[in-house]
Image 1: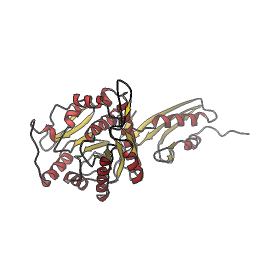
Image 2: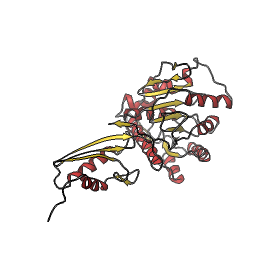
Image 3: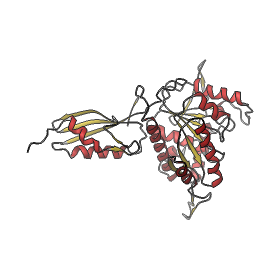
Image 4: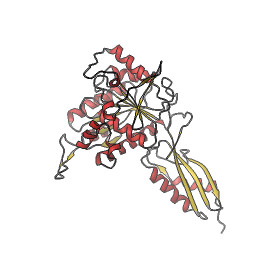
Length: 360
């Protein structure tokens, strides 16, 4: 009985057993398999994912290697992983070069939204993605302090050069306010600020621009959704019922504005005493998960209440950078990966633009 000779077609057929769990299709059908080369039993190829923050990239590589090695005649494999972050079908013409804009939102204040924004931005940047962070909380801009950004944006004449910290490009009203100065603005000024932060900042090429929104459902949220097509929004809540109830209002707002909600996150989800190890659900437990299930939204995880998160934020270094193996840092990093996966899911059915390749 003759054996079919090893070929590119045979390799591609074997790789159809490798399925992306988020996109729910095999990597060949998705077009991820590139540059297949077969040479005297040695098989080399590239798997081109949709984000450098893919949470299952190692599993996909392992599955691909096993599928190839199972073919008769294979003596060696070389599977290279890269990523191409997809963009909006029409691009973000108002901010050229920015491929995806994700709003980080909450229904009420005090849920740790800015802390999550800073850590998610830093976590995505650590994967090799190009990330910007726009602090749109004009009344309480805290991103510069949390990111340790002590410089000020450079005035380029008609544009501003954002401050770069922890690999993230940052803009915030906090850079332009004197200590103790309050912002007392009505809607038109807020709308002008949003448009200037989007269109008059030299963002360059970004895979993700995260926008830290103020709490609630007011002028800034409306201005953002009207100014650009959002890739989506991430909703942050704490476990207790009152926070979840208010978070639902933020979700309703984005639905009304035709901006997709990419998922929910539960912050301050339980506390473990560093001295005795006892666990305490100070604010209840599982509220955001139950809300996500009821609303048929992705649940991206929970972040424990930990003093180290606050301490690192006060020092100006997000915990995902300062102590990446801490439980809270691992949770935040995983949420960043799942958020990137949701962006990819959102973009799967949309037209591609010219790719920008990021190597792992």
